[in-house]
Length: 175
Length: 446
Ligand SMILES: Cc1cc2nc3c(=O)[nH]c(=O)nc-3n(C[C@H](O)[C@H](O)[C@H](O)COP(=O)(O)O)c2cc1C
Ligand code: SF4
Image (cartoon, rainbow over all chains, first blue to last red; front, top):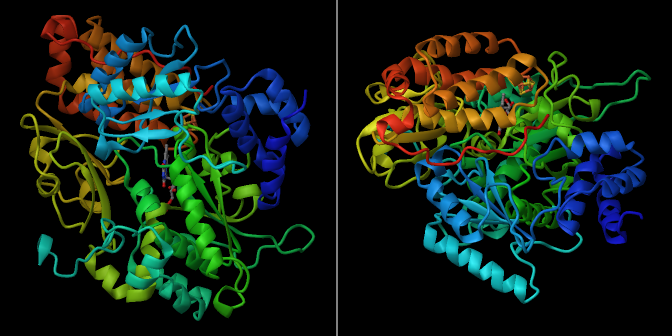
């Protein structure tokens, strides 16, 4: 297999912005993460081939950054901030609520493969704590009622075949 | 006038609550947008650096290094081994990840052109034709808003070739991280910008000699750049006057935790922590117990110490730091050992693992705090914590290890009786508290 054509196209489109080819590695990993929801060894090989980097280089970078998932994830990554300001404002209740509702522990994926529950570190939303991310989208000042609604809405949207939590994504742009 | 400072006026946030404030048209029409650039481009680079020096602007990323001085460290005409000129890069640090800090995100979403203008002026000042904005990976929307702002600036001729007919060229490119706090450290950021693991580099060489892609580079924080247009447009005197003797201007202070009106406030530096808490609506849910005054890495202050002023020097004198301007307020319902543990767990996860003191130290500190919370702690642990911290601070490649010791040491020193009570009574259960967040985390970066 090779890297998907549209990913190659996106990367070729930004090549001129950077002095080295390796600079494209993090963008490439982001694109793969977005496309497949995780980064497999095969993906890494494809990236390495396209960017002329050995697998070891791709792997050492992929494994360094928490946003690149090296195992299969749920379709929706529900990431609740539990760092200090969110913690002081009741992030613990949100985590408990999400666990109850999804029947998973932190870091686990629901049996139907729809949701992964993740605890994340400070999202720079301390003034609107507690905060969470649903895939790419931020939600702030979240309480349990809102969290339940977020999960219910996401469940409905997934069932209707819609993309969830990527409301500002633009096709062909790696950012 | 307001805040007992007759010279004060908001430098960065005068209009951030108005609709449309993030657009280029608003910036040009209502905020004299890009006027400072016009002026700067008519000046010699050294003159621009001089204005910034005289303004007493200090870096807002955490270390508080004088910005004009940093700019003057950039070599004027660097050449490679063959005598060919080397490019220089200007880098904006938008990795904002210090717990309790959320000011740069406000600038990104509400007044991005101020930062862009500051960067173009910075590029002219240090003789760079290319800037990179390194943004933390979680900011999907923020990145896209910033890209739109950059596109608009290109369309109006403020970016690109021959800017405003001056002959100066400047391009601006966004690069996105992928979830690693340590990439906020400037040399880790440079590695990440090159598509590598975000591991801090040994200094020297400093970025001004060997920075991004091996070229001379200058890294500044978002807020630092956003202050530059004002300095050029209104003059350095005005900016310098607002601040203290050794630090000009205003600060963007993020107040969070147990206050009624959390948020980012642009304030003069002659306010005490207590006054700032009042501005943020006062303490909620109980009485004031402790404050972290400059992002999670800053040593804690007890309520009785909160009369201290919030300029760099006063906070340093009080044994803590102004850091990144994030003030975290804790009321008297908070168990300090537990609060500190939430931070240590974060540091344990975020250590890049290059230095054994930091990798092992942050791990052991987190484990020891957990043990105390779980009821397995001993009195000796408290001394041992201090010992571990002593082996970490100042012993490593980057200042991350020092940052870890900030909360760890200060909490034990200032709230020792709480730790002793937990040890005596068998942990959180003994004082009738439940552990509030299950503390299982993902793997570390190593
Ligand atoms: C562990 C660590 C994390 C840091 N995180 C940030 C950050 O998120 N944002 C930032 O601007 N500076 C951060 N810094 C400071 C940078 O290394 C650097 O000093 C700063 O970007 C310089 O910009 P300034 O001179 O404008 O402050 C961090 C430093 C350390 C040691
Ligand atoms: S001090 Fe910690 S974070 Fe900094 S380089 Fe060493 S191991 Fe990495």
